[in-house]
Image 1 (cartoon, helix red, strand yellow):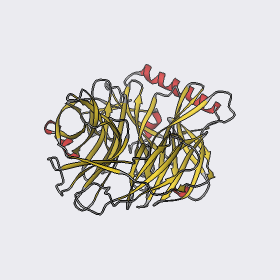
Image 2 (tube, helix red, strand yellow):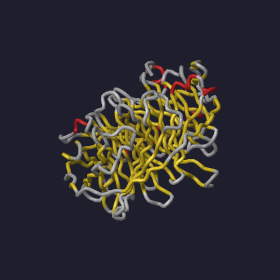
Image 3 (cartoon, one colour):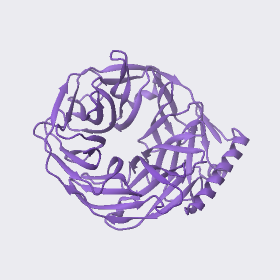
Image 4 (tube, one colour):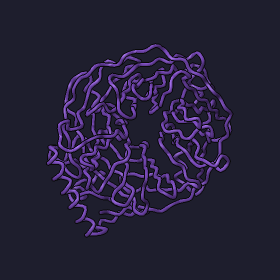
Length: 472
């Protein structure tokens, strides 16, 4: 494998024995996948591992120019942010002064925004946190600091969607309060300062008093903030469309904002994830229903079409189930959505990434994907949209933290290719608008120092990929 650190590219293997072991594991994964009737082609892919830093959870978000990413990693003792690229010329990592459990993050306007939870000494428990920093600070990390806002009324903030108007920045989030109720949250800044690290941020949150809802995900479309919610003891799922207020310097919801609701078909199992798509008013909902991954397209509040993707062998001998993990979209073309899920077959986990072109709507077509078997050296944990049909995932490579980039239109090496056919299904049902209550609180922006960390980065995968994929 090739080691990339301090702008030096080395082409010698790190461990021959490790290389042989990985080859054996990949060969065994191939045999298992063929037994499970997967297509016997393999997917060309770039993998990088960050040696010396294990991971419990990791994320990446793309930065322009393409092939650069802001990355996050968390293990048992620390949290890291960093900047990486696929050439190996830019690898900068910083350790946060206090551990932050980041659940989601997004890049906009040269800044990275994140949400999650962290320990607060005043209340002596984990509390919600929203934070941000300018990406340019990673060029001089010795002077870098992270700005963050504590939400002590919350246990965690787990998903965010950023949007800005002429004079107001909005970090829209969903999370769980200390009272165990789920809330829709807005941290907003009513100014035009390109780096608003002062004390002008405000925060507010809302809930539906007559509904015990669990909010899974959030997205912003043209005129609305969209939230997926499980209600009625999680026996049904409603997609909520909250009309954005036209007022500057205020939360995106106001007493005058409509909250329209659409009930998705059938009875989903587990959480429901959202993804904004190419159209300014277009979003998708993904969830498990029986042996299927269900996909619902929304144009505004309307659900013109939905379909199934079969995941499980319904009549199989061994018990099977799957869990929906993450979704992302191609950041350039915005016409292909990738979905990460974990399928368990006879107590063995298989990690799958499906690549779903939005051109499937309204046609019925095949869906391609990649599978990492139970003996694969790489385990994806989260997704990041690349460009030109490159899907980036972050996860674990053996004992290290790692990144993989799959070229969805080419199939040569590293992971198994899947091929399955969609089936059309019924569409969602509009419900009556809902009422909600709003709470507003003052806030304070805190600042956290970081320390520079040095980690070697290795180029993994097959010998053929190393020798023939020079444009990584």
